Image 1: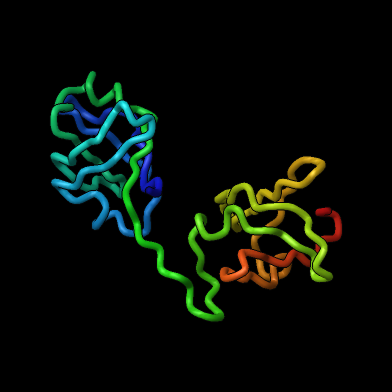
Image 2: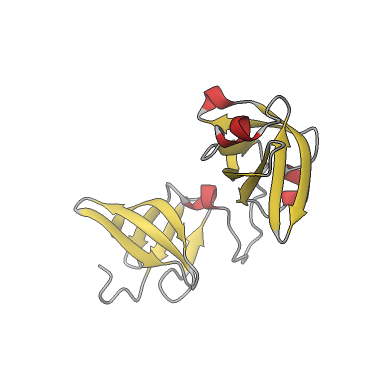
Length: 165
């Protein structure tokens, strides 16, 4: 189960909510009739009653939550769906966060630095959060600093790290 969105503020009086879409396929994930699990789990599952886009914002309403106060009670809820993540092809530079989190981070000489704890989405580029024995470090997730990623062995190489480590 992956987080595909987060419920924002109520929109209007008929139970619609704004959605922070965290999926590359909102038209597929947010279809009318789809049932979504939630985090926290006691707020769901939720069945999509209406789905539309307004000025680039996804608006949804859910069965049984068709007034503003019911919609407002869902604010901050994460929406989850079962998503099949294809294994990237050889040489691909596209990965899903769930394939990166948990990987061992190593220097080019093989010394283990730590483990990828998270991937932060920043405007310029993604940033890896590496959990080390002495705390956390942030590494720009760009080819200059992460030249090699091996999905099969669940390892990535960190290089050119002057000032990072």
